[in-house]
Image 1 (tube, one colour):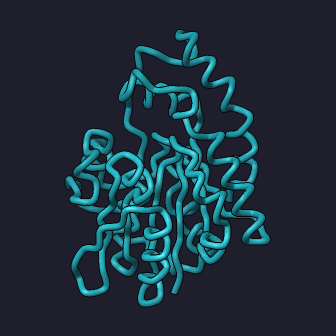
Image 2: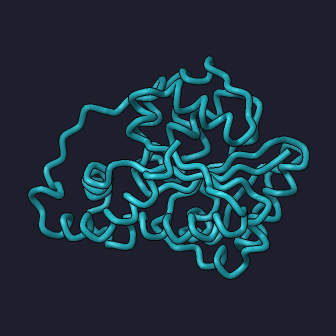
Length: 239
């Protein structure tokens, strides 16, 4: 058994990917444990007995996920508006985890993020944090971590998910590519960020236009210019 992590920048379609993992039914799925800890100072996690264990440090979270993974494969995803310095300071604790990444065209991701959070900072965009963690994961794994191009995922979900499953050692379950729309308990604390995922029944880009974009907003353009090189470095590794 194992623990599979998906590290995402905000607005990368990662919640839809997590929803697909829930639809599989054969893995334990955990939603954003580190960002929850950072924002709320505690993270409730499933326990082996069917109950809940509340963790209050990054080390406790990682140890508990690894322990859960001894019985059943665990998949968790987290967003990287934060750097999570603990991971860099304790590489031994992440060495046994299968690290994967998902990236999306930063022009659209930044516009979507800004529409949700107009107070967002440049570091909140997340690609720089992703790249630094990618480099760390490559060092501790001794190989290239798996990267998904979210734009291709939304266009060709079966092909991308099949390749992802092969790369992380999971059987491909095409029936999990569709699911019933529902507001999941996993994301109740941050449900306003997951409206599209709650309404979805499969992978697909919502038809949305944003008032502020990198083309008409100087602040967003500066964020885009800063993070574009990190996106380009990551996406060149996409499966």
